[in-house]
Length: 292
Ligand SMILES: [Zn+2]
Image (cartoon, rainbow, N blue to C red; front, top):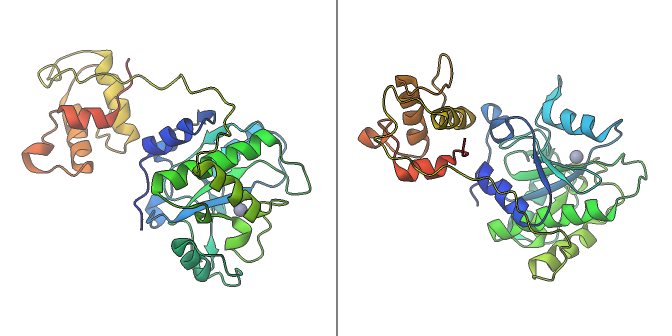
């Protein structure tokens, strides 16, 4: 049993794995958590997208979904250059119904039985990556496969899972073909090699980690103070689903900022006077307010 990573942890471990990461929209809070459970997580599911006209269009489709299947349709879209596009985080519509015996095998990290039942909702339990490929015999570029292996290994490492926690959609849901032309046992072998620490990365280390604003002190954040930092904080509170603004957020500290910050403190598990809306250093650090 494992608690899902936070969105920021998810992003950080992917970047650390050496892949290029691009963020789309409010991916951190774009999810289907209002429709059902997210977590406990047990593994990673690999998909192919199917036919597409442009890669950018396919990334957007995976983000928004369509009427009969609203997005996000995965957490990350891996394009043919190996760039990972973050489109959602939390419960998504990607794994669908699959085989409970497969889920048991993933949890136990045993070899997988055939997927011959669709009796279990996989969306709470799997991180999902849609990899851009028509599924009609199109080759898989080396850079794309490399990124697919790396993000899978990064999640296994973060959760202390073995490579057996990585499955193809075709191993989960009866009738699914994806990812086409990929032998998942070979895929898992490649993931296992990364987990063993064998060097495979040729991508230069990441240099564009965001810079977060240090805690300015509780006395700074008070009624009437005007600062771009307060706008930046308010935007982060909105991203975290804690916005209690009727208009804004804006640069001037108001009761709406305090109410929003109190919602953030409650989200972190604080209560009573610890959730009074007056920022403290710990909750501030966890909010990761970008430097304005
Ligand atoms: Zn799929």
